[in-house]
Amino acid sequence: MIELPIENCPVCEYEKIPSSSYYVAGPSRLYQCPNCGDFIITLMAYRFTPIINDLNVKALVSYFIRNNSSSENPIFIDRNKYEEIINTYKLPSTSEQINNLLKWFGRQSDNSLDTVDGYTKNLPALIGAKNQLQVINLLDQLLKDDYIEMENPSMDLRERPSFNGFCGYLTSKGISKLEELDRSNTIITFNTPVLSVEKFLKDETKNLEVKGSLQLDLNRLLKGEGKKVNDINVALSGVLKSITSFLNTSGGNILIGAVETDKFKLDEINKIEYKLFSNYYLIGVLVENNNLDNYQLTFRNLTSSHISKEVSGLVDIYFNEFEGFTLCNVAVNKVNHKWYYLDRKFFVRDGNRTIELTGEDGDNYKIRNKRF
Ligand SMILES: [Zn+2]
Image (tube, rainbow, N blue to C red; front, side, top):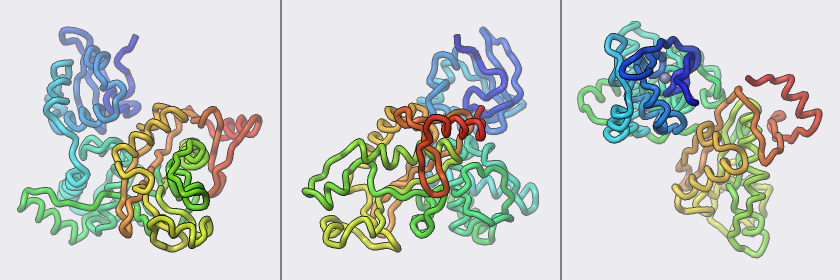
């Protein structure tokens, strides 16, 4: 029987938080979550709604709590309240999320007179993001646009999926942007936050991989008879394998829609539209599927059926426009609670390669890198 969790937030799953039982016309618990804020939820609302497993619902309810509850007057969520929330509330768009984050920076720097200390873990609910990784993406965008500065700018944020605590401040550009936001009371649009494609293609490293397509057989299209054919083996030996290995190592990013120039001769690549960039031919993902919703759906179906249903919660997909092509960025979260398999095969990263570990090698790896 499903019970209300005692140590974790039932909405965002934040671990080890204070909670206490409560009784209002049935069992309930009061939670004090650093991400969502303080709230009371009934066992029935937890047991009989998608709060328990739907990530979009979780994000929405979490965002609602953070914006409508306080420790003095914690909101009470029963099944009616839940219905009200999902019928009247909406998750903010990416631009709104960035605005929320920038405004938060403004409030924090007013309070602390300059530097802002934050935990990406405590911010998803505040800005309406689905997870910590999205927060990191948004921070990265603010950094790239010079609205904020970090005290420790040693590394690109997106390259460390475990990134948590940070110390930063608003730049003068950030301050004037905030003033503009206050004055106009409108949303200022930003580009979709993505890691820089340019940087990505120039230094493919341990946590970055570039793939030509999800499941379109490019060899058959460009070297073979020229037909567009999807082949599950392309996905299995490419994107899906990389996702599995990132999940078993420390997360990472996959960019889909570019191929290394040495893979195809000029008369081969000339059969489709492309653009030369660094050591890659940019081909984009529209050649594979010109309906991006459909592309995402295919992607989700492939990861659920060959890796795990959980993958959709651990992986974020963004589409980026770059040099006239639509590329797909797959951001894989760092996880440490269990191991993942691709059709029962076990893959890990070894430097900038993906390798399969079988038998004793796999056992030894799992002993050396414990997961709980
Ligand atoms: Zn929470």
